[in-house]
Amino acid sequence: QGTDNSTLIPHGVSVRDALNHTFANVRYAEGVDTTGHVIGNRTADLALAASSAYTIVVVGEASYTEKNGDIPDLHLPLGQRKYIKQLTAIPSTNVIVVVVAGRPRLLGGAHKKAAAVLVRLHCSFLPCEQGGQAIADVISGRVNPSAKLPLTYPQASGNIHLPYFHRVNSECREGFQDCAMEWTFGAGLSYTSFEYSNVTLSDTKVRSNGTLTLDVTVTNTGLRAGKEVVFVFISQKVRHGAVPEVKLLKHFTKVSLQPQEATTVRFTLSAADWSYYRPQIGRGFHSVSEPGLFHAIVKHDTDCGRHPALCKAFHVDA
Image 1 (cartoon, rainbow, N blue to C red):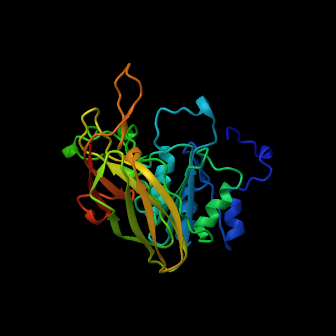
Image 2 (cartoon, rainbow, N blue to C red; image 1 turned 90 degrees about the vertical axis):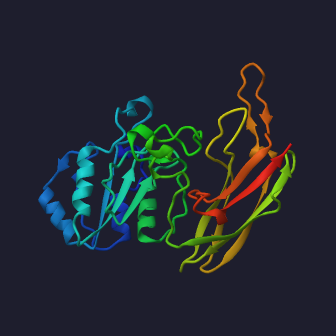
């Protein structure tokens, strides 16, 4: 991070080198640089893509660190977005877009016709020495991905301030609905598929200092082994002491399942899950629990109105 001197990363593997080691008959064109400027012959590059079964286009930003990386606009450079659109307009190739960046760079819809999008936001938000090999392993299928986004990936520059846990009164003006995002917190695909069922709560009422258990069955319905992160969010729509969040992640775990295997995951909910810190200044920082209606929500993209089987209501009594 913060250097383009490859000698300082002696064991580093670029995406290009990793793909060459992973696949046969890899052909390469530089296409566009990190600032969006065209490099080489664009007509020849597009013809090369048209003659290929798959086209992997790697875009993003150069390495940076701290204040030197500040930018006024989060959009990918216009030249990169145009290049992606030109490639995805070719009907004879399947385009895989790889975004290597230190933050969510806005795509401006350039990826909409791509066969797949791989966003590489690593622990330091830029790939480490083996980042190139990790990308190649996922693209080739050698590794079945199970990572989930640790943030909400915005779609527009006006919505970059809205995390998944925003207040219920922070919405977009169109019908006072959730703002459209590129990908929500917790999103992430796999080469297999998982089905959630039999979500149950041990009770529908609980005292403020009591506990509940939540069970959910997760089934690998695909053809290969995979891992799935199981999320549980808590939502409270009305709160007297402060405006509540849309939802808050309270529990998660990862399960590993063989094809057609199922497992029941159990979570214990307690006062820590339905309490909040009262924001009154000068009175200390106290966790309080208000009686009322709550919802336990399984999965990152569950809407209680559309997916009632994954959303269970319970009442907290005083």
